[in-house]
Length: 305
Image (cartoon, rainbow, N blue to C red; front, side, top):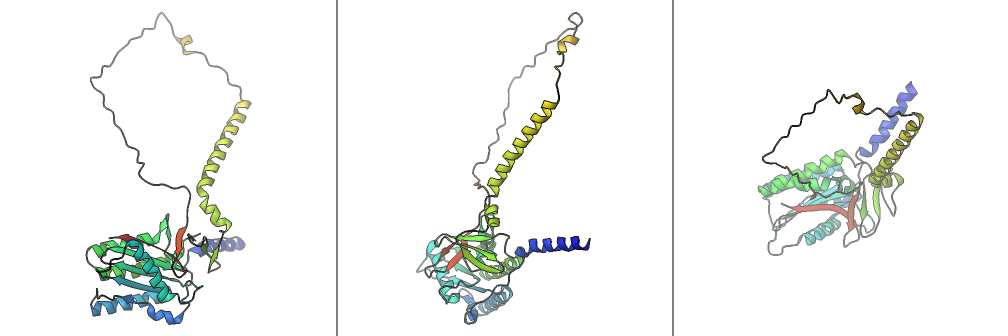
């Protein structure tokens, strides 16, 4: 009995292990001092900027990752959305990726004030903690959470909410079977034994997750065939006798039929529109990433407020 309980507990632990936070590592000590608020145009006053900077550094310690907030507020040189995204990746690299072949673990918020564009760039294990997969778009939710603050002019509240969400999703752990695919290098990134690995192919368990929709269809067809075969076998074992017609029990002399007609003045037809606007995709898919101009892998996402 004790062995069964121990085995059950071990199985539960193995199932929950991928959901627990993996200890990230700030690989370069010299870069820790760069975890702060960058506000070159003075969007925040000195007191508010100091409070936000302290919060960013405290959040960095809690999630054991690099984290920063960059404000763009120069209306004379407005960046497009794409330029903002490129700037965010390159800015993160300049602050936290000093070594060519090492992608540090982190997340960075960029607020383009003139164009009202939010962009969050992720790196290393940050691509998985702050996931951007279609079925589990954590980055997308983080962006949505900032819009209300920015629309009301509470810019400091937006920075605080970003730090709050960064800590929340770190404590939530990496989603089970989370992975990203880099469209530039064509490599997959996922966690293996607590380490981030990049390979050309995914393990079988990840592939099974991707083809879950196909497996469901195949399983349904197999179940239907099984049901038909079972019905045929059961039917062959029983001989059905033809029942008598109901007319055999009716007397032609004593039976009288009455016919009544209902006349409708008008008819009313209700039509229901089938919603075909929603996009749908079969199965599951992972997150996406790309390479910066410096060759580092980045995930992330953005949106307008």
